[in-house]
Amino acid sequence: RVIPDNAAFRSLMSELGVIFAPNILSPAATRGFAGFNFSVEMGLTTVNSKNNANTNSAGNPGDSPTHWYWRAAESVDANAFADNNISNPAAISRIESGLPPSLAPTVSIMVRKGLWLPVPSFELGAGVTHLIGSSMFAGVATAKLALHEGFQDFPLPAFAVRGSASHVFGGQGFHMTSIGLDGSISKHFGIASTFNMTPYLGYQLLWIIADSEVLDATPDIDSFGSSMAGATNPYQLVQCSGQDCNSVFTFIDQADIVRHRIFAGVRINFYLVSLLVDYSYVMAGATSDVGSITGNPTKDESGAQHKISFALSLDY
Image (tube, rainbow, N blue to C red):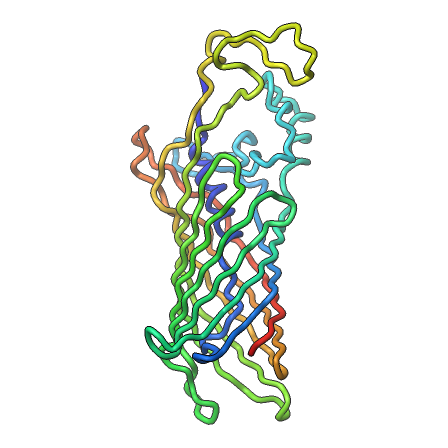
C-alpha cells in the first residue's frame, strides 16, 4: 500500500511557497494617490534540493537518501526508485543528477496604483509570477498602507505595512497559497540633483497554506482491473492485482507553514524609469503540524533560503 511521506510534502511546499511569495521590490513610501507603476521583475531563489525531510527516533533529521523532499520533480528518474534500487549507488546517483538546481528563477509582471480611498497613502498591486522551466504560474495581489511618507529635508523615514497574497496555478497534485504581512522603512535621497535613491529594509511574516489533490501512485496500472493486454499502445494499461488496486492517496491536511523573511533593497530613479534590487533571507522552516493522524508531529524541515530580486519599472 502507499504510505505518504507527509514530512517531505510539508518541506517541499514550504520551499516552493517561498519561491512564489510576492517580491518586495518597493520602498515604504507609496506613489501617491495619482501614481501608477508598471514593472518587470526577475527573482532568483535558492532551494535545498538535496536536503532530507524525515525524523529519526531522537527527533533529529534523518539521513536516508530516500527522503529528498525535492525528489517529486519531473526531472528525477522515477525508475531509479523501483525494486529497491535505492540501495544501489548507481540508482542514487541517477536520482541526485535529476534533482532541481539550487536556484529557482522566476519572472513577474506587476502593476501598482496609488489610491486616495479608503485612506490616503494607500496602494494596490496585482500581477503574475512564472517559475521558469515549469508549468506553474501564480496570481499575485498586494495592498500597502504608508503610515508615514517621510520628509526629504528631515531624517525621519517613511514607514509602511503591506499585505500580499499569491495563489499557484498549474501545479500538479497540490494547491498552494502564500500570504505575507510585512513592515518596512525607507528614506529618499537626491543624488547630484539628477537621481533619486531610496534604500529600504523590513521584515515579513509568511504563511504558506498547502494541501494535496487525490494522487495515483501507479498511473500506469488500471485501478478498475480492466485488462488491456494485447493493446498496441506503448502506454497500455495492465490489469491490477492485490495492493496495486489501492494506490490512490492524499497527503494529510496540515497546519499552515510559517516562515520568517528579512529583506533590504534600494530603488534608483531617473525621471520615469526606476531600477530596483533587493535581497531577502528566509529563515529555515521550524513549524510542526501536531494534528497528524499518526499522533506524531510532522515538522517543516526546509532549509534557509536566499532570494535576490531585480526590477525595471516605469512610474507615472
